[in-house]
Length: 270
Image (tube, rainbow, N blue to C red):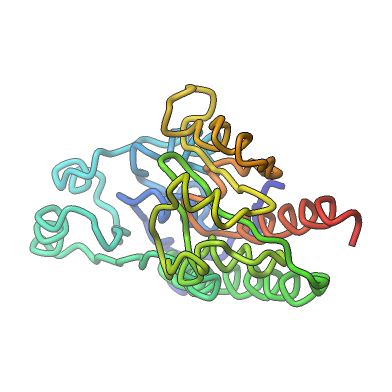
C-alpha cells in the first residue's frame, strides 16, 4: 500500500516552510506530509530500499550526510533531526539560528501517531496529519478481535535480535493476536533470544525482518538452524520487509493486518 495525501496548503503568508531532514525516520514523514517544493534535502539513508519505505520517491531529492555545512548551503527554514543525530552538527545549526525539530524514536504505536502530527505541524500541513491519524486510529480500532488461544511468536532478526512490549514491533504483535515470546524471556524493550531460548520456549511462529535479506549470513540464518528441526520445532516463518519495521508510519498498521492474516492462517482459519 502506498501512502500519499493530495492538496496543497500554504502558510498564512503564502510562503511554505522549506525543510531538510538528517534522520531516516524523519525523511519518511517529510515525504508523506510535505509538498514537493518544500523538501530541500533528505538523509542519505532515504535512498536505501532496505530501510526507507519511500525510497523510490526519495531518489527524486538531494541527500545529505548530516554535515552542518551541507545543510547551511540549502537555507532551510527548519531542520528535522533524530534523538541521536550528531550533537555537534545540531549545535552548530542552532548557533547559526536555524530552527531545529527533534523527532523522538517511536517506541509505541501512539508515538507513531504523535510523530505524524508533529511533522505535519512543523511543515505547515497540520490538517494532513490530523486526517491521516484519524484514519489510522479508525483502522486500528476496527481490527478483528483476536481469538484465543493466542499463538506464541518471536520477533527473530539476525543474531536473535527481538523486541518486547515496550516497542512498536512488540505492540504490533500484540494487536495482531500473538503472545510475544520476548515477554516470557524477560525482555521488555529490546534484546536477544538465543537459539536455546527459542528451543525451550517453542514459538509457533518466527517473525523476521532482516535488513539485507538473501545475503545468507550466519546471523540471519538462525531460523533455519538444524537444532530447531532436531528439537522437533518447525515454526511458521513470517517475513516483513525491513523498510516497514525500521521506522514507524502508516505502514505499521499494514504490518499489523499482515500479521493478523498470518495468525489466522496459522491457527486454521480463526
